[in-house]
Length: 375
Image (cartoon, rainbow, N blue to C red):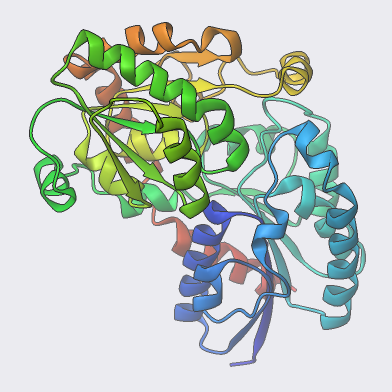
């Protein structure tokens, strides 16, 4: 069996999870693989030595990126040069489209096979990017069925592989066991999930705590749990808690346990909404961006929804409160009824979970090895 050299680049924690699952599945199929590129701790644990820390690629918001643009462009240029010299059998860009699609284009022109894993939101905005994808990408691997349909219509080679989280999360999560593990009492529990990045927590952390206070005033028996993505986020939240009196448990990480334990979720739009869906927890989705970023996006976005649950359901399954609509009162008023009646949401979530449960990492590994074999 000939040795394979596979290059991967992931830009943030969710990409690190996908990348490590794919690497594991590839190693199970082909014993002798060298992995090169950029990844986080999970990908490094599967045998990649990352060219530089993955965190350097993790930036949020159009305006926010500008401050880091020079560094990002320099890193990308160096990466392309290194990878062309290393001549991997295939390059896999995992998410981070603004960074990886350009790498794919340059590598493919240099004769290296390219895969993009996780579709950018081309169906929602900047649809012209699909032309760049068609030119730069030998294969697109999508996590969601509606994305594959879009690429098929645009003539891009695509495979819907399902979502690894749908495989990992059980169809029925044990709420009592999760509460016992976290030492949380019985009674109504709301998870607050204001995001994992500093910018998100800055815009949503205080807002979610204000909403929690309103909920607590209306129903003093309600408890709250907030998983902090890392120590920096924990410090940020602790600063927002000064002077507040809330029955709130802060967790270090353990967001999946928080979702399993809770009855309802107040959540930032993003990957975490998919996790809440897979745990079948009714949710209210909120988001705030800088006014300029929001104004630009409003003009660009073609999709009627921003949150994944609604995109997957192709209807308004969960409430979305964005920008000025995301007030403490509105969030509290929308989340309170879910403590006693989120059945319509949870039924929809169960249907979606089943369609996404396809053994994604193995499907993706088969598709990648199939592409290498074609050459």
